[in-house]
Image 1 (cartoon, rainbow, N blue to C red):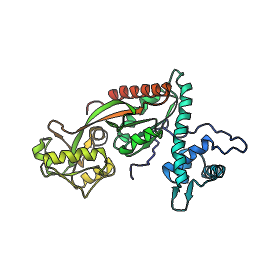
Image 2: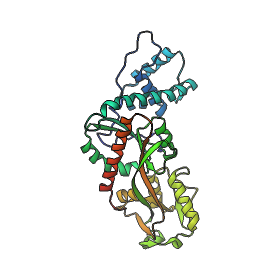
Image 3: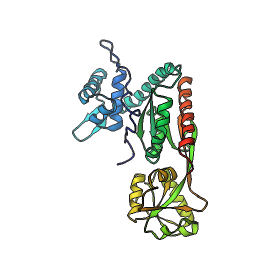
Length: 335
């Protein structure tokens, strides 16, 4: 499955059930959409499917469809083209979605003003992160966050790394976790941890007999990588060019698990993130992890949030980022 659009319930406290904003009742004869209707439209724009959109905002498909039709009638324009096979936004629908994201972001920041006066953080935080980080990191962060902030709920969405900055800037996410640096200057960032990219080969690979290699051993080595456009692809591509390894462009994984499976079948070697290796590969007898002298490949993972917005929301996310950093320092350990 492609990274984009995957939504995971990673823990009972990390749920979309509480992401709905309070229901509002329109004034009789008003042509202004309700906050709920804007939320429904955004959900449709994100997943392009009525049933999944309804699940995302914790309502029924008939309710979502009816409210969307009511909004179209109120505005006097079609927002979504409907068919059995697909859901497509009209040009007017795309314009409304862009504005709706800003409106909902402002509404949430209004609510955050009250939340910020509580002793503990509470409410819903929308977190975006790539699949090359999420499954390894989030389960390690959840227990500490759940204990420290019992009233804080996370709605977690996996996304392609390149799309995270735009999603954060546009209000789709409150915070994002991903490889640093983040594009654009409108974000505050905090480093969470540094990790090496570790060489992994099949158990019967010629290099599997070694526990350590240097760059000379990698010449002409067939190397697999994630799809082009992913930051990890660029890192591995540049390194392969430097040491004379052969990046196998006819094969590309869309996830770290896919790369892992291709390596196990003998298609090639791969450089995988240290946290992923530590979490998933320590007991995998079909693979061998080999240390490269000097560990020349690495990446920095951090958390980012918008500089703009009221002081309450910015302080809220800064506090959360700092606690994530403290937790990561305790639970990840050496990589």
